Image (cartoon, rainbow, N blue to C red; front, side):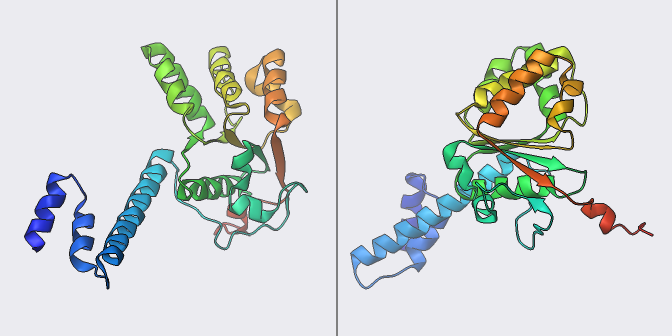
Length: 240
């Protein structure tokens, strides 16, 4: 019977895990047995889907909110730590702008939110902003820009890390604006930056484009301020 089950699963293109569960699980009735097998298969597929979403997100490293220190992080009244930990703001297509010094924990928070979103079955994409701009420029150069923009349009959360750390040329700025504008009221954004809004023109070198970009971002955004020193410096072996 075991061999027959595995053979049938193979013919039906069911996973080996499904076959294993069909062999090992039991129930007091046929219906109970079937429910257990189907539930186990559903859990297996959900876990595989989460693993795929995490892989496709492109995180630098997986981080969570476990033991995350919220001290000296100013969170607006419309949000709270639970909203952040559960990524609840995604349901309203809202955005987060994480502002503060280098090493203050912005990227960690953005990644932890992204990981949680993946665990909920949402599609996430994490980029260093300069990398995103370079990929957009390369895609335009080789004729694949439309395909790249279509892929980005299917995600639920776009994370742009280290926003403004490197200036963009005119073409790169326009392409980035196109991506941000397309996200407006369709999907959520998280931006981490150490540059205040008033200085964003130094990144894009175009006052009108900068103003239009900020206008779209702030409409549905929450500003979270990291009013603390660099965590890396605080824990550095070189600290005197």
